[in-house]
Length: 331
Image (spheres, helix red, strand yellow):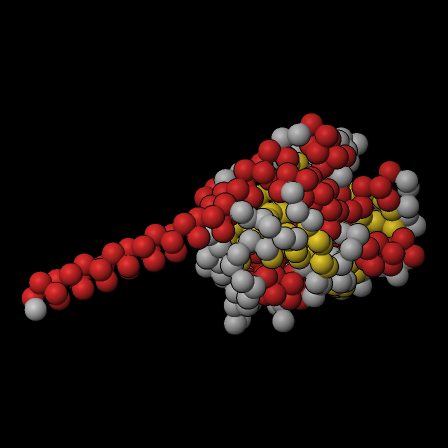
């Protein structure tokens, strides 16, 4: 009897080992086959803005390397939170990605209560794709022709001037709040649902001033439809050297910038994240892509997933401190 039980136990153990081996091979093969169907890339902002432009430059090249279509879906709302929430709740299989930004994954999650999601826990950051300056814009008929005149005008008319931005809590908005804080002026913030509608109103004179990401406004600047008063970075942007920095234009010490990156849902297999990261990094090193991004006002990056995690963590802390210091209300 004991020998029979021993034989049965051995057979059971062998069966379990075979099943486990089959499971492991199936998992490995399934992972190795990624991707075997189309991938959805959620852009949590309207078409035509900086995030959308950068995503649409990356997507077809990533599609070519992966051998599967990448379908872009614009899911705008709440400064990028709505589309990002959709991705955070999607299956962690690499078939739904988000092209996030400083607003959706650096500012708003750090300061909203309750927190809509955790950019680290609820996502698998793939790579920082690009950084870009913001730019202070003016309607061509605006009474102030440079930053110093704008500050003087705002001080003479407290609370009378307005400035538009691409969203509530986005980096253009926060660039405006930083201007108000450092220049000690009062201006009314007018949030828009993306860069395209804001630029329409700026060109039409419904607002006199605005902050935007440089890529989505550079063509309008160069065509003379709007006037660029200053970029928000510490140094002039190499591909728009004619635009002074905020510091040069009359506000020493001022510095702000925007960033964009690719993220997957949390718990996405590391092999999938690493595969996406390698392809993204390789694409961003292509001279053609670098040229396109630079012409759009963006600097390609392409760092590792681990580096991107550390970057997001630092950004969240930075903007939480800025909001606490300025008392900005975003709800």
